[in-house]
Image (cartoon, rainbow, N blue to C red; front, side):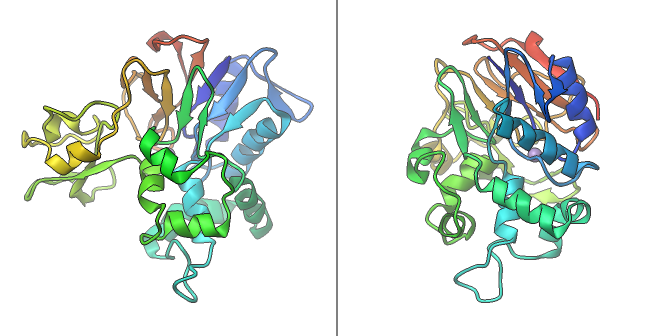
Length: 304
Ligand SMILES: [Mn+2]
């Protein structure tokens, strides 16, 4: 059985406390549990104080076979940041703008060039999602239609894939963005909201798991993005939606910077385990024992 663990972002102390609470102990170089395996939902790097130790713990566990892990958007961004853009000589697939450099700043400060290169080589081995039979794992959004376009979840993350996925003109850009960053809807004219960084946004992340019919922007936006608009969703948002079936096996995601005193489910078979450990929240796990309907009593948390 599996213990799902949300976005860590360099908070190795919280990770060690969480693993200990879950019954894992360090033994022969890796954290292990006698009966269980951990599954990491991506976003290991950036922001937090102990990125090197976070990578050592997660990688030690995946190498030892005591954990699985999927790629987060921060890992994909780091790869794109370091990969030349074949269509723009001298440029990288992810441009080195001040905003993009800021996102990677803590990682660049804490890892030596050799450590960063080793981390990037490992990121290339991470699957984009995991279908484990009784449960599914993806960083931001499970969407069968887009996953079919991307190909097998363990396709090699080579430079050709990165160019197709990370260049806005690449033919895999739209599906990979949806899978690793979630789905967004452009807000009606004149409607904006202020995000946690103080920026005014003209798009909102949507509740991709729910059928969109009959919703307004207010009711279809993710809870962390309160949209003050009862305008119905436009046809193109409804047409592009691939909601997650309510009778499908549970799916676990990270990514969404949820906040609250304690974790809650998005739906009976959809759980987000990103409770903002890197911004005033906590690290969050879910102890899964095969249940088809998730149980909020199975969340386990650790303070940063
Ligand atoms: Mn994250």
